[in-house]
Length: 396
Image 1 (spheres, one colour):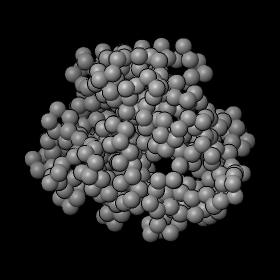
Image 2 (image 1 turned 45 degrees about the vertical axis):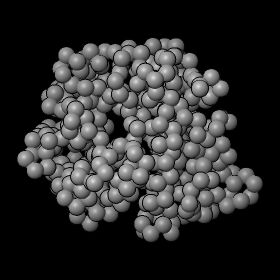
Image 3 (image 1 turned 90 degrees about the vertical axis):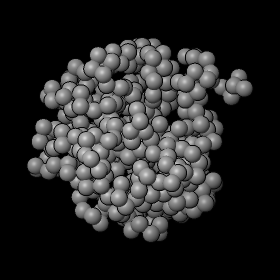
């Protein structure tokens, strides 16, 4: 399963959100550009012209995530390459009012329709980004889930492709235990949210997955030291540690071993506490443009192509490490995240001229979709385990 942001907007797409996540406020220019990758839009039904130009002089175009045709294409790719489905992100900042919640449901509603059409799974992932540290609690999540069940029929569609875990619909809450977030996990009512999702007589009966930092076990490094995090994990069903940016191919042998050892130790910890475990894998990382285009101090902190993909070698080293550690599921970060350079969907080898962007190092634009499908096959035992990245020539 992959994470699915669905947050890219284009001027003229009807959302009224301008070029959100393609750029800052106002016009989309080289100076305001956000992503570090550029989408391959050759298969999209609807695209939108930008002020940027391709190297051949043609106008550079992008898709919008609010278009049903966009979601439809993405789910068709999932079916084509054997990807089981996606966790559709719902950010806390979009849940505070009824109007915001309704507006933010467009992509999710499209995903429900496309999941049925292509036989893919979907699940709701609540991201606590945007939660204020001024005493705000998470009751908006409870209200949103009620509306999704009552109005969107999220778990009771005639053709129900909602993801179930151990016989129960799975809801994910991401963003607990990170020290760079101002909210205190003891004061946001998370225990009530989890209890509601699991036990409410009308809206409950769910399984819950929590997204936490990499070093959640030891409560150190990238994790807040408060042991209350462990209490919350014990009340949930699955834990998914966010491992993006924590490992690099620049220390290939060391980090490959370290990643696998991390997964093994996490699994042992979870087994002892009767909690299931989903390790996180990603193809690379880069957020140069997102952070002021590498100007000033950012040049050292956020270089372009910070965690190189190495044509899929890094991605496959994490995948094979997790499978070899006996993981039973994989969380892929992310399907469509170009801002942080983790997207596995089709990105361009020929991004627009005059801007700093990564390309796919000459591999086919569907390379990471295909590798993700192969990862699923290896996870399920349909192809032999291998630490060597597969090639299409030797796959029958």
